[in-house]
Length: 154
Image 1 (tube, rainbow, N blue to C red):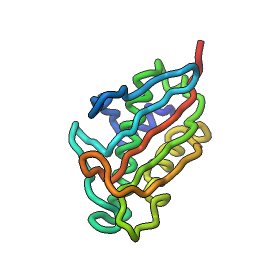
Image 2: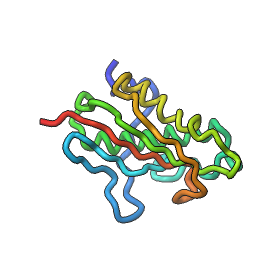
Image 3: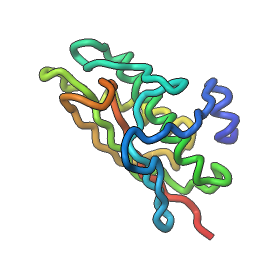
């Protein structure tokens, strides 16, 4: 099954690349590496999951937020690719999880993103990562994820 077929089977439609909220670009390519700026759990141009894990939100909501954020990362990445076949590897994701002071399950929240990448891309989706708990995020988002990928170059 191709990546496009897998996305369709999962009911995922990649959105337009979200507009930057400040002075930066959403995606930048340097040689074979593509850097995707931090993406929030946006759906239809609106923040879909807000609040702190361990206070306002449970694990399922946090994982859904991570899944939405990585879908937005994929939209930005796809804007640099002619085809998903040009993707060599997802190198790294960094997840910032807005958490209460006594919440320690940031890695499990970020699995909402990691598992989707592996499901879509197989070995090319296996990546290194960092899951960080933070006090606050833009727009009160539950999480923010940035990504680095390697692509084929001519």
